Length: 387
Length: 94
Image (cartoon, rainbow over all chains, first blue to last red; front, side, top):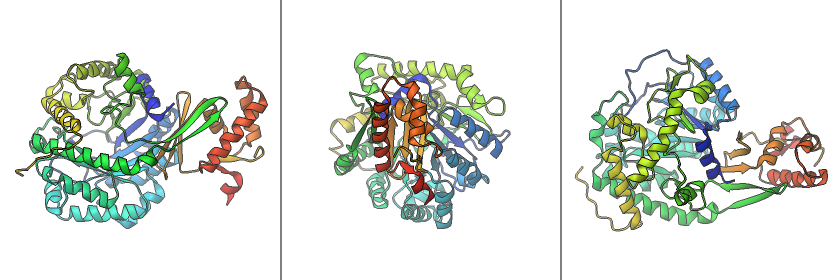
């Protein structure tokens, strides 16, 4: 079975694959679009709680753990918890603004945590734009320097970028910068309200022309990258074990939701009309905040349990709220298909409209812009930003 | 080969997902899926047991001849060793 089919099966059969841990909401930046509710309070999880949680997750067969925040490296017990996760065999992602990762800290991170990947955030192609969004002068220079250090140590870095009206005119330059740093980059055009409902960040949402331009440029960029690496992507080695196949395959860059392989579970479900879930929220993924609150996804902040009250195993297998979300995911998928979409973010929908089944207008617009850009394979670009 | 002790390369992340094994090769950025037989072998491959001992443990679970099991496991181990996924006891001690 391919990895994608196995993950599709995990979603269908509710296998907890990935857990995101928000270790702290403290941060050394003040990004204007940050979604964290900085006023949220409660009884913090201790390193002992995290060890117990990670032990339980091993038993549950969870593959990966992501550490985020706030800025996770500010959490005073970060190395204690993250190296414990490493020792327990998790594939680890650290989502950091990378400002703390000077050479000394980067070497320590590699030595003690050995993450699969570091995900960081780039908000512009130059200091003026980037620092305008982080509200900290010098943050761009430090970020780029630290990414170079991480890469020189052989560490994998992925760049995430929230597309805003401040940086929508710099997408091409950001793609070039990411290439120069030898890092993949992913843009997210959805700026959500804060988790406390504050809609202030939404004012930074990029223009429709800017969003479409980003899609066109990233499609062109992906096509160029695919041509370069096609031979490597197709590398497959098959080993026969007692008449069965054990396939070894490099992870393809295909996005199964946007571009389903017709041979995949997803593609076949589309062809046969079999019901699928909208996403893995609560079916393969969970997010846990610093106070032990458990949510189906980092973007879907509907409380399904708390680790101070119940173990993760109990929450995963018995929480009625989680069962409801899994059912909701089927309905949401039907709702997406009825709107000509393959999926949408239930969490953002609930946050923006109060109803996880109500696809909000920005999601519909983004989907339309993406499809238009994809239809002509990223060509026919005419965009001028007023920002 | 049969008396050799093997263990997973420490940078390999390994989990059971239902009846399949998922191996993540950190350095090569590769994800691998192993079928149930390979999964059983790897779960028993703890750096303590030899290949022969593991096959002895596995044999009652599979309706195949011992020769067939030995042949396939040998091929499986050789392939994983070539890929740098399994390390022999001697290599581990170095």
